[in-house]
Length: 309
Image 1 (cartoon, rainbow, N blue to C red):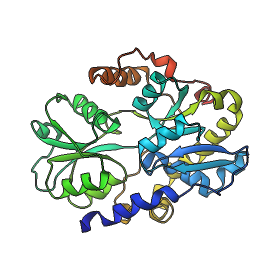
Image 2: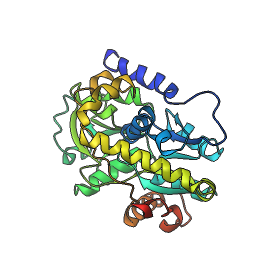
Image 3: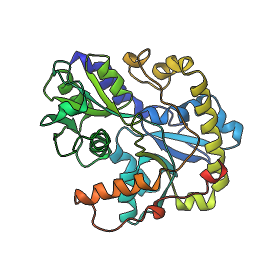
Image 4: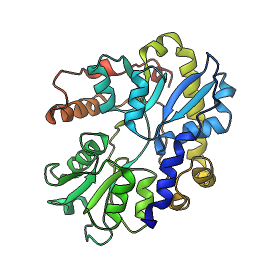
């Protein structure tokens, strides 16, 4: 239990960060983020005053889990949010007009238990992999296995929705492997887990940024300003990632264990996911009988932001 104490504190406190003042002006752009690598440039942009420099008032609202985030999107409590292709497809099926405006550059990965002896994805055949079922986590595990030429039906998905428990079971060898996002992936590898694969090295773009169509129609210029600030922050991180190691812990509240070990992702200019990535994610949802209706890829995206880049 001691192994995951700092991570428990991280997950318990992060929802209070970057939420902005209790009262925001009517002009504030409310954007949901998650405590992960995707969100780092937004945190840097907020901390460095880059949103204000572009002339847009941004309130970053941190959600500790996708369920809270999706509820906020559906209730109209945020104008946009970090999300994933699967969640956007669910929103579309439910009649919520949310549009993907770009991918985000996070990282999901699979790590084996310290004493498992597993050294690569092929070693997962017949093994238990801890994850949250029917979510972006399971989707990325299947996608990583497919990309590596290993059948996605060759392992046993083991449902462990609570991330701290998943980490604890992995480190104690109660599951053979587990999947999680950064920075928790780095945290478990730093405690002896064996890194097998990550989505960024295999070109899997499942994480996205979405905005409601209403926001895009009424406040397109504000969203463009938001993106300009985001990209300036992303470039700062890309140019000197080591300068942000203290920021990871002191301001983004990542676990202390990741300060020196974290491998920064390379943040790209705003770009939409390839149509094939959307088609693949929707096909996965259908194969799992999670949706039955068709979800046209073009219906999930809005090209007005990336057209500037």
